[in-house]
Length: 355
Length: 155
Image (cartoon, rainbow over all chains, first blue to last red; front, side):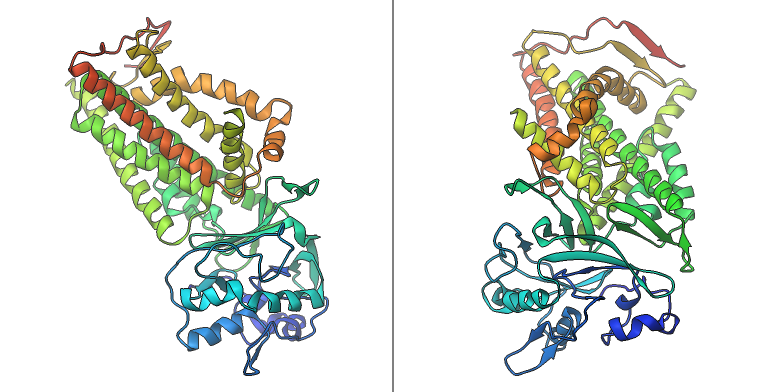
């Protein structure tokens, strides 16, 4: 299981929430934001009817997907391995047995910061079986064709931050991540771009991830220093509601201001872009030097490391990686950083010594 | 071709927006510009090998030493990057064209952009290696650089 780091407030501090959200699991009930009608987790603050999301043929009912997956785990049906992906298609008649495409595993949440993976064998039953229909039924009984997001105020009350038709929602899973996209339709023909409303693994940009923390190659020495400062100015989580940064948590659980969150995220973004640019031009320098002078250890390294570093930075910038992909990006980024710094140091030494 | 390029830009916009909805336009703009600038260099190498034009060298850079990494990076930025940044400024921001691109070429994620990055870099390396090999066996000439308009030298 993944880590649970988001619940910083004890249950008892928000008594108003307990009857509504205490489904027998710790951690996710006290989150500040959640989605209604999300197939990743069902919660309806305005009309909780205690209706099971899934009822197995033997009569065993589950009121949350988390509970269902806890049951699966107890049976050994879930594995930590990733295989395949699935997608919710709002252009295929909404929820229903036929709307899933692709094959492989179905993800499920344990809470908003962790996830579980259902094994291929069990997951395949869902594509064609009754699972999707049952989930659809449960959702329709509450708020048909509506997706909404809420945040929890400090006094335990709820504040709706976003609401739209389910037709404007797409669920897209990538390697180890699920994003709920807001993709409004254009004249019923297709989506107009999209933005992520909820993510199973939102990148904590404000924290300064491993890649940007080591984003030094060539001209990136100053960026390294800046990012170290940013990392020391540590943030625990951040959250996006309706496309805006609403709050960010300090390590002690207190909320930072929206302005601080945005500043941290922009800073981290700048560092990633700096890494992307310096790696790209490192590759340029390697190819240019190679084509002019022939292969040397130096320009060969520039080409290979610059290329890998640029691709890794591109993945970080454009795909929100988690799991082994993120680890690979961090390793490549760190390698590129060490190489770039050493190269610059060597060049300066050469210049000073007059070689 | 134009639509495909717009799809790449749209993919970068959607991908960048997934983790930073505030400055995704700038992120996409800079990243696409850099990769396209490397593609300009690839095309420039091929044209130079064909004897059509010289390698772009408007600004000659010699910051630490002429063959240092920083000098090479700044050379790429000033000669190819500036042109690319200017062109893409109009592609992205002129009359908020990025909004039209998102509507015209909708994408689900940033995968296409990542492929574009990887393929562009690999093609650039293959081109460099190929031209060097052809130069060694005497099929094409070595690179010829245009006379610089400005020399940037710090030390």
